[in-house]
Length: 446
Image (cartoon, one colour):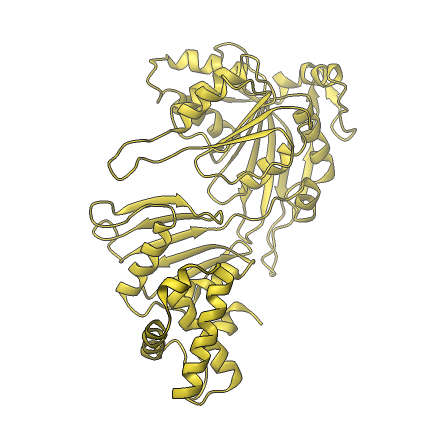
């Protein structure tokens, strides 16, 4: 049964979403009959089982008479209100949902398979939504009120949560919960149409040959998913340090150190930034550094690390094209507290970045690598990019599904020689050509 049909208001006089007062009434009765001190000593699963059992006795004793399905639904809703996150609980348990968006008490949206849809769910009141929000942020020792109207945090279960409330939000309390998918293998991404086998072979050679790779794309294009999949290609014996704002990467190697930034506390103190972690990671003898996303002055530290002995590092950046990614790295690098001329930043990028992998999210919700490009410029010269693979979409048909072909282009001789020296193969469909970095390159003004 789909989530939408499962959540639809029931027929007849069975309690549904329009009967929030019934749920509230039974929630009060339930709280009157349980021993809160005893409940706090139970494990989460035992606590829920105890509440369901007590509530079942209350309904049997006081009514109403309900069908088995309606009775189970009522018990679930009341216990969710008393113990969990209310109407959000079933959504968090649905593995097909990747994002939950609450725009005030009357509008709940979810993203499923890349598509956003509104569900026929609502909170009973503004106060109930605020109680749910406060319950969520309290699990990470944060608070939300008029003095702190914005919270961005990661739940112990791994979800990323963003909250913004009035007076900043004019539509009422707004809650966004981003659930991160399981770690996909590159072979699974082929099945999903993100890339093809030849592109996988090329990217594998790049990672094993210690090329520095930047994964670029817009919001929700699958940058973290691809970064996690690419990281599986790193040899087991290497020491890897991951640095993220919110821990999303799930590396499988044995020698991994995961670092996560920290926001300031309620007094505005104790903040640890991505830049602090990048700087500290250089003192931890890393073989490779993986930065979940660069978005500020830490970009300069990351570029310096990439160009001074930490080859094979990976990072993501928000950008809509390979050219845009390089320009954004240059802009972000200038945001550090070190006054570095743009020309010097261009030199840093040219010496640090080898490969830019561009991801795009299409209208049907699919995510694909639309271009793999090599940065072949030197020193302070203008960025020159050589595309070696790309996805060309076909006109969309009546089924609204995006189809197309992955194209494979020749590698510049200099890049091919570097792969040969690392004993990494070049897929036959690509080939090698002298001078391709001049003939087929694109310039990005920096």
